[in-house]
Length: 139
Ligand SMILES: *[C@@H]1O[C@H](CO)[C@@H](O)[C@H](O)[C@H]1NC(C)=O
Image 1 (spheres, rainbow, N blue to C red):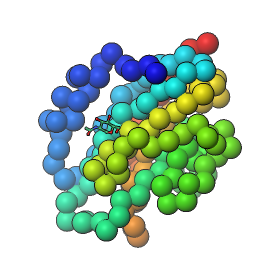
Image 2: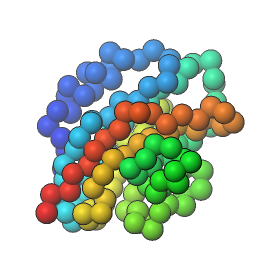
Image 3: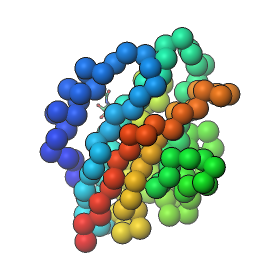
Image 4: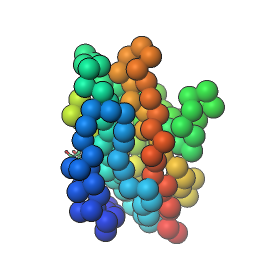
């Protein structure tokens, strides 16, 4: 598994940015070798007053907008994912703890691209964060 070297700084940034508003924190770029796996460390936040009963989330590939029907990398509500990600994506984080850390395994070149997280607290309280990670697959 490949971890990025900037990780300590990344967690310091998270510690400093709590505050009960919509926001997400993840590395802006990450590299991993073809055939290995990689985790994208991710934290998100939302207004405290929403108090959702259950927190759901979706990871999208290459587009943040559901209207564009981007490939679904992971979806906590249905477990239905795009065929490129079947058996290769797993959520390591606990969404209830606002942790959206994603594991991608058996990496192949077509998995290189942008990864967007969308928090789904039910009803209109869904939000795709503009912060995203660009995954570079090294051959
Ligand atoms: C998020 O979850 C991952 C996987 O369980 C864990 O390694 C990481 O420490 C968690 N991050 C935080 C900030 O709790």
